[in-house]
Image (cartoon, rainbow, N blue to C red; front, side, top):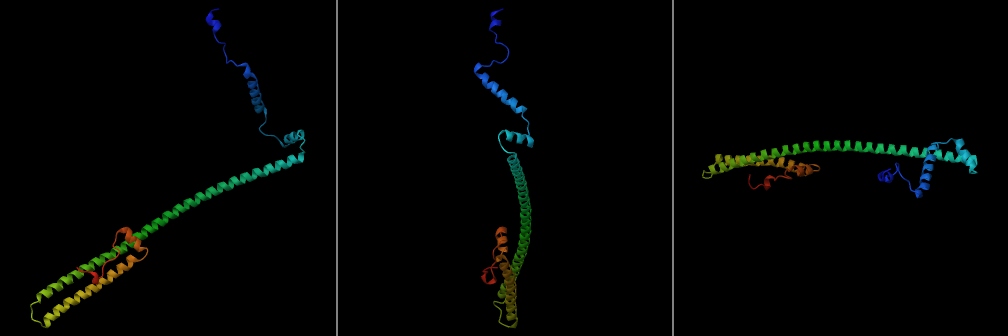
Length: 209
């Protein structure tokens, strides 16, 4: 036999002598675990209790307590699951309610904004009307500035003044309506968010039409 053959390691895993006891102990424990039944009958438990000098009635009481504890644990799990489901349902309903409220508020805001914008357009239209009669009054005054005072002159100038007064009152009505609406809650918030003016001047506050 060659030197190479004599020096070759033997086949299989080698085990140190110091590890033999630990290896046998581990193998025995695994064998006992595989051989042990997963469940025992009541009679098996009572026989074990008898070997330990435990009366059978105490075994029965212990098993009743164990069964009650298991039922309570199962009931607690069921209640916890129901609570989780109820919480998820409340959150889901809350999300739908919040979405519905947001939609309602959004639509209400649009309605309010449209109403304010419509009133503001009327204010603008009426202001233009005042401007027209003011310019007409200026023309009438220029026309009769050098004319001899008389019924016709006085009637034309007076009529121009009256038309200005009438249109200014009409302007003040729509301006007051807009200011009252824009300053009331919740329209005031819509005014701020939409960029509409918070108020418009009355005729007494206007220096130039």
